[in-house]
Length: 292
Image (cartoon, rainbow, N blue to C red; front, side, top):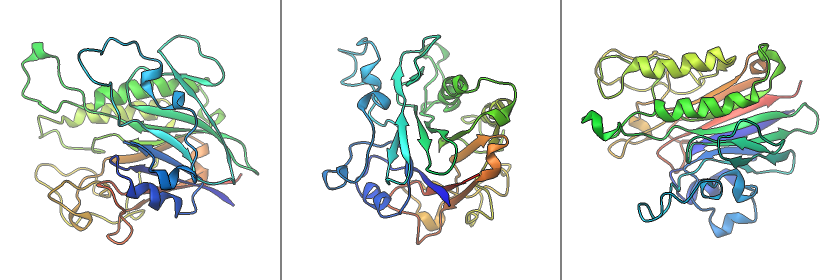
């Protein structure tokens, strides 16, 4: 038996929620969650708001400047009664946390929980969303969108609190989500320098978190690769722009990682065929954790 998880950026849409509850999965790692539609609310559990809503732990410095901080929060969602889920409450980035807390340094970037299967040891799951951060005005930069590695490194710092030994095999951590970056990307696009993105993947490895892809053949390859030096040829598209469709998608932005040792029990596949893509601009990652 295995615990089945789904990782999905659902773009704040309602239809993906309906598709999630039909998948016979146990847990979803969701990004850009938005509101749960009323017809689905009774079929899923999202834990208390403290597990995903940054408004509950942040100061109110944003009042008068923003209506609200950020509403595209990641969530951990319980989809079945086959497993238990213990959600971690978000608190400000302090040096010491309680058993049921996670210290968070980015707004709308991370959610975490403990998954307890019936016949296997528990493991930590982390839903990651590396939102874009614009350069400081003093730079006078032309990078109007910014860079996602700024958020990704904050996520890694928060995730690092669950790593308490130099031996990765003592941990059981599964982290997945939308990093808004390309694995082994090109250095030829000045607005998305590959070296910065590679620094994130390198830091994951340094923390003892194995890169689980997904990569081909665990997903359909893109039909073509855009200009510049191509990224790793095994990358599989998980996102399409508004001018593209699932059939013409090129970019892989969604990834999974697992603690070294524990990763041998984890299989990841991109549900990126045209038929199974789903009702979002991102496809789903199907993740199975085998009982040990």
